[in-house]
Amino acid sequence: MIYILCLEKYSKLEVKMSNLIYTGSSWNFDKLYRMMDACEEIAINDMGLDCFPNQLEIITVEQMLDAYSSVGMPLMYNHWSFGKSFIQNKQNYSVGRMGLAYELVINSNPCINYLMEENSMTTQGLVIAHAAFGHNHFFKNNYLFQQWTSPDAIVDYLLFAKKYVRECEERYGTDAVEETLDACHAIQYQSINKYKRPNKISAREEIEQQRTRSEYLQSQVNDLWRTLPNSKKKEDKNLLEKGWPAEPEENLLYFLEKHSPILTSWQREMCRIVRRVAQYFYPQYQTKVMNEGFASFTHHHIFNELYNQGKVDDGAMLEFFKLHSSVLYQPSFDSPNYNGFNPYALGFAILKDIQRVCTEPDEEDKQWFPHLADTDWRIAIKDIAANYRDESAILQFLGPKVIRDQGMFNLHDEIHYDNYLVTSIHNERGYKKIRKNLAASYETAAMIPDIQITNADITNTRDLTLLHESYKGKRLDKKTADQVLSHVQKLWGYKVKLYTMNDNTLLDVYECKQLSNSKVGTSPLDDHGDQWN
Image 1 (cartoon, rainbow, N blue to C red):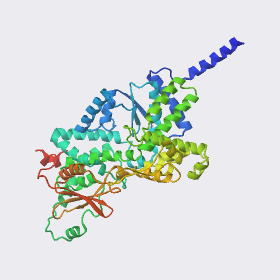
Image 2 (cartoon, rainbow, N blue to C red):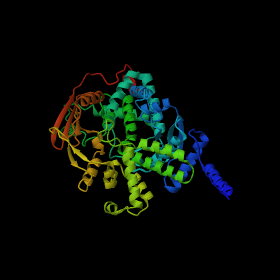
Image 3 (cartoon, one colour):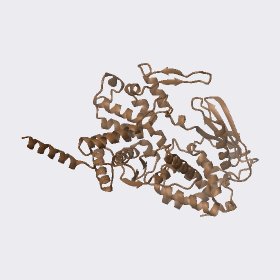
Image 4 (cartoon, rainbow, N blue to C red):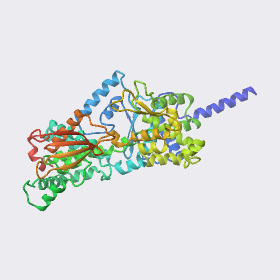
């Protein structure tokens, strides 16, 4: 009888072992294919995710460092700042001052997933669940990515940009191109359409339209700047009386591309390239918490389901939990390593709490989230991923349990204070204040200064006026502001002024006078730039 029981036990163990996707830490492509299929079955059939087709790329450490330096893209145009970033990252990595991400994922169609070749098999599985299905679903379904990016065309457009910049370097010289790109990069985050949806990008259309667009733009600029200060035309008087542009322009590079009196056609195309690449990243920094939180939630759910199905063993789960915990590690506020909230940890905590509210709500949950209690958590989680950015998601779904678990509190500071003032703690009186203030810290204006062009004096001095709408009284760093203004002046060619306003109060005035009569990126061939094709 004992012998029979032992056989039965051995038989069950043999069946369980045969169901495993892998054993040990080493990986091969057969294991990756099986892991991909197993993750896809749970992601699609259980969670109901909707993803782009996936493309997995196995890369080396140096290739990952290269991707880091080119802002995480598979290819990028040449610029010295990318090389500088590569050297810094490589040096820091080689002496142990920084680690590398287990993966990189590109918002493209198909979705490109980079996996490090030195990863263990469990790490590769986590990466597949996290990036190939978590990030992938978020990219395809979140409203910001749907409205503001072109995943079908981004890789082809970057190839066009890389080729165009290289050709400009060969024709006009590396120094001229780098000086132009330096100036464009200085204001790239103030060169985004926040309200008007940009046109879809297409590499083929860009190539076909590039020469026509250059000739048209130059003719329009020539007509605009043919206006003389003493002109008696009625339209010129209207410009003097009403100012131009008629409404503030939030996209600085767009305005300079279309209206700068000194840029040549190839430099205008540089402005266009930089602002279009910057536009691609516009949703990314608005959804960092929810994007990483959703991807972490996805890999956590998938791996636990794999374990429940007997497809990964205890050893794999122990390694998974170690990796998962390190990704979600949140230093305390008094730690030397504290640098704000870990977006992975905050996003994951919010989504796990919503899952709990949907499945096992208590009385507090029913008061805070009556519309979510006892509902399908899959629908709720996917709705958050699709229809919210960080600010709105935190404002809507950060609950008291997460606030208590994270030990959140509000600090207030003024210039004349000797010490910080604690204004709210994690109790009944403080929950909503903490949630409101934390959500406000993820507003776009809190991260990137809101600077717009309010006036260009095209009939007289040709001065350009910029307005910085201060966020809660925050001021610009004077040194940085002066440096950025010098770059704007190079693209405009004449004096540039910047006013910082807080409501109706003037805080600061910055000015960059005309440095010289030379154009940005001056080259002996610039006079013929308009005829180049």
